[in-house]
Image 1 (cartoon, rainbow, N blue to C red):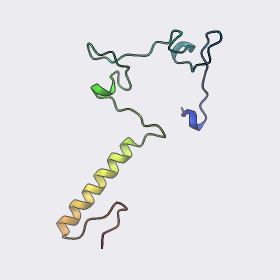
Image 2 (image 1 turned 180 degrees about the horizontal axis):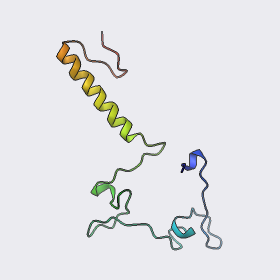
Image 3 (image 1 turned 30 degrees about the vertical axis):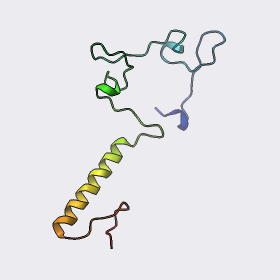
Image 4 (image 1 turned 90 degrees about the vertical axis):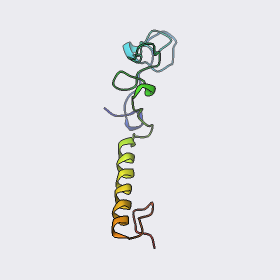
Length: 101
């Protein structure tokens, strides 16, 4: 599947006269679509991923293509480069990944 930005079609609510975006079952929230709730007992938030809400551990997908995992990997790579530089007694890299100095 693709996102709306990259060509996915949006479907409108099947209720007469409604111009909202349809969710499950072809209807908007107002006209009967049922979104899943968080699986934790007593929580009324909507589930995002894995049946739980963000508060209970779901990672929300960022608008514009995600990048959450890539960002974490880049942070880890930068930390590893800084550790290597400290071990070699060299100036750690700057934000571009190039050695300082």
